[in-house]
Length: 67
Image (cartoon, helix red, strand yellow):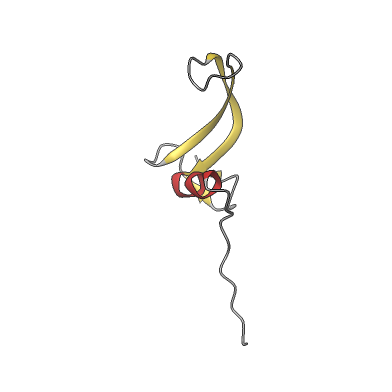
């Protein structure tokens, strides 16, 4: 099964290492751990795309230009 990365739009294998799956969960306000009732969401992403997004950047596609 192949899925598409939510950030770069490139295909990825959900079984590969370095792949993230988006989930939906409940957290207490002000905490970043202790997730409860975790369920699958629709998103998938490459590790590198997650790292870029965490830094506030966006993965840019290469474009060829003459000038």
